Image 1 (tube, rainbow, N blue to C red):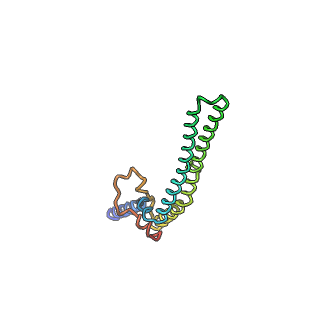
Image 2: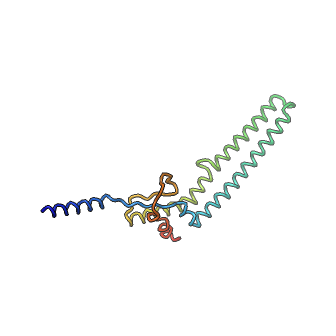
Image 3: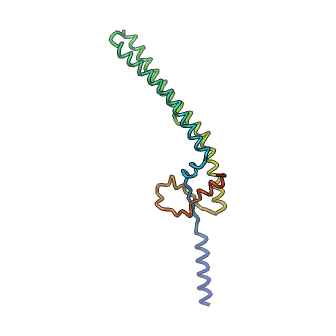
Length: 170
């Protein structure tokens, strides 16, 4: 009787241990993204747009600087109303430059919208692949090693980055 109770206790402990054991996996988002050609081309497109728009902003800044230098040079000859008018022109141009910066680079700006359009579908497909693999393999948690600064060491055996790439067709 004692043996039966003892064996039953061990069996219950093993079952309970397996029930509460959770499987974890890691992905390396940087590793995955570097191997997706569409992400690289999206990055190049965003860089090109950024440089183009920054060039436009820089040209406007140069115009304002020229206006200010001319204003400084003419300051001694300007009457009160002319002086105020030129100052207002410079301030208006500076405000226009700030609006242009916000239009292109602000939180709701063109660069952000373009990034959303180009990069979000790639990220969504990665998320769906991770979700599918996690469901099939019963992973409780999948962490991104690239963004989890607190992971000091992780066994390469729990890294499913190559599975994600394979699921995406890369």
